[in-house]
Length: 274
Image (cartoon, rainbow, N blue to C red; front, side, top):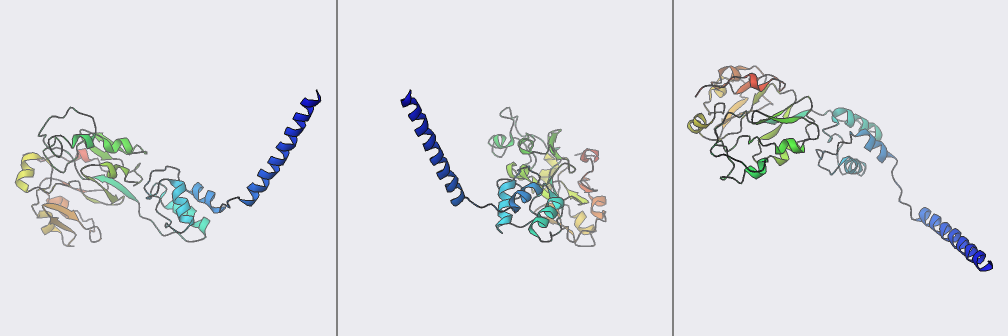
């Protein structure tokens, strides 16, 4: 009986000693955490979308705290998150412009082959060289972008990816996985939109796509503000000069240029006959 009591007593003393040692060690070797870090993390939406360029919200907050990143990079949180982070850091946040993704394609192009493989754009690109569609730059429509969007902001409709700008946060994860680089960032307030990325000559485009830009230069000639030019067979808008007068859209023979906010239903624009 005594042996058992002695063993329990020894174990109790050892436990107390080791506990005291651990308590002292935790104090001596404790890593001090800046009290602002939890507040910065709380100011972020917690989406961990990577749109800021960091692995997640905590990594971005840590970078801001250490001065390795600027406030305002969180596209999902927008201006509200930037203001809250600035308040924590004791600075004034710069005004941020809301950016959303836009798919530079409306479809209506012909197919050069039938694809029955994995329903993924990146997989389809290996078929027939650059994918099964005749347009070498158009949306393949197999939804690689849809699979990575955490905000339910992009869906494939009638074979073409379409973005809901009301849900889009501008994280551009969809753009990162698009093998044809059809998805680009555009200001949420952009009125003049050219949803095409094809650089083929007009004759080829007329033959293979009902809605692609044919590089006719009519929009360029109509613009009085030098805001639109045909570059490598594709009309491109310089938004720093564009005043949204809509004259380019009025003269476009293919009705490709949209004179509206991105919230317009693209399906309402009729396709030109071949």
